[in-house]
Image (tube, rainbow, N blue to C red; front, side, top):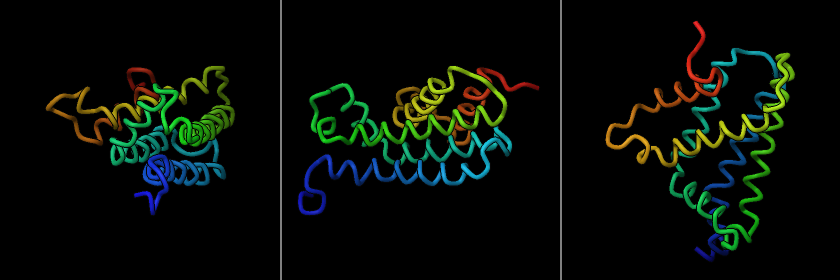
Length: 158
């Protein structure tokens, strides 16, 4: 491990942070040219599904990320890995704000809404077994419900 990654934070950065950075960069690049256009529900489901899959496939590492945030003195925290993740979240927040403005919506809560959405997606993907018990819904049902909740609150308008 030390030969390839140098230390535990190096391994964590390679296994969890870099895929997250790549996801954010790819998503932002695909949206920047068409901000404000497209079906918001379809775009949200795509984003939520891809982010859910990323956290789900790296859920043990994501759990470590959450734990490291609690332990400010942790090796991950001291290494700057958490700052790398926060930087990517800030990019997603800015994109969310740009999308909101482009659609003619004015919300002073967009940044908090984007952060809340990311937290819900990450939490459901990482700790889903804890929430669902033995009868976990399908990935598609989870993604659909997250999208409806994020976009509309509780119920999709008819």
